[in-house]
Length: 519
Ligand SMILES: Cc1cc2nc3c(=O)[nH]c(=O)nc-3n(C[C@H](O)[C@H](O)[C@H](O)COP(=O)(O)OP(=O)(O)OC[C@H]3O[C@@H](n4cnc5c(N)ncnc54)[C@H](O)[C@@H]3O)c2cc1C
Image (tube, rainbow, N blue to C red):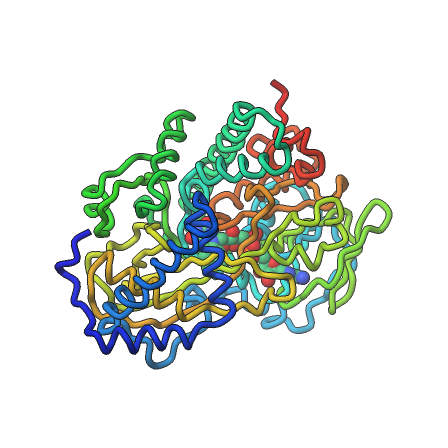
């Protein structure tokens, strides 16, 4: 990319910025840097990785960040809550706000713990059946207060990035560790089967979301303008491989794009070619969750209790006891839809697979102003982050992926240095224009050991789970909710998109069965 249009910082500003950044570094920034080195430079030896990272850091401190200084405004009140939470939550404090004396149930056929994408999807699908059994959703804070109300608002068609290739690579990596003797060809075939199943489930889920938005006339800012992906020289080979893989598997959603086409589509200036997911969309994720759960609880057999933290879930004969501060509920079946919080709340059930859920911090920011070349409604993933302009005119952007421990859940903080790097990237890729930060927040996503979701029974009995959605839970959670609903109604023979050989948590307990298909 040509540098001619960039206004460059003078020597003294460069020195001031570099010194300020060095003295402002925190331990959490170091952890993010370590993660970035592992991810970005994975194909090099450790000394080469360190040299490359050093070169990259110097470029950030001496060029990119100082050059963006005159455009970027970080003064004034910057909220640490997600931009999505600026909208009014119609289910805030439900039912306590309107009915403080509401009775808390002692029994239920099904208890769903967590009201994010996953929990609300189950309730919605349950409301569409003729079944009269009772379903209770318990939410520790507010509906969509977890990752569902903190994310980037991109309904990607497959994978957090790199389309299905993300899954293909992570499954191969997992197999290299767990089954080193498996011939390479078998590893590749297995990884392709996982990719194919995942991408098809994701596409079906997105289609179901689109139809639901239309049928229910939901006002969730849904805008299907595609999602553009481009990278830099370090990761260019991944993009090319992902395009080849999609073509081989017949996935028509992931198309190659030249640098000129990328500029035309999303305004970004890049020297490198990339790809586009044609069917991806953007939306207001929290409004979606509020809307579908709002529809579900109109049915008399479905109830929601917010501000009701679950302390413990234990097996009790054929059923379960769900302990909360408001009392305990005896349930025949339970669903864990708490994503990262699985590691604390369902710890006792994780004995067979202690690393099933691996929480990672993500961060996101919202700014006003910025380059006009950035187009509304097109999701963009570029080097070191994702970006998009909202219908309101603001810019949402972010990334991170630093591992966090169980005791950090709910206490993660956004890193200002990561914000600075992404703001500098906007100025560099879309052009320099005044841009003011308004919101800066962090949230947690969850990986599994193969970075592939889990949708199925957690204890081989009636405790189910949907999660491990990594950075792509918005699309796949909806159909995963339908799958869990079928399990709850003993209709597992009707499950199409989440075959257990691919999605069950038990795929990690016996690696010989991993991904085994009937054929
Ligand atoms: C910054 C960021 C950006 C992201 N960007 C995207 C994106 O652009 N596109 C995309 O598809 N995905 C994105 N993701 C990932 C996506 O948000 C998640 O995959 C998704 O939200 C997971 O949904 P969930 O319902 O499983 O979990 P959550 O939405 O986290 O819901 C879990 C719920 O459980 C509740 N809970 C937890 N413990 C308890 C308890 N003990 N008792 C009662 N309730 C409890 C929580 O309060 C929470 O409401 C992003 C995530 C983050 C953090």
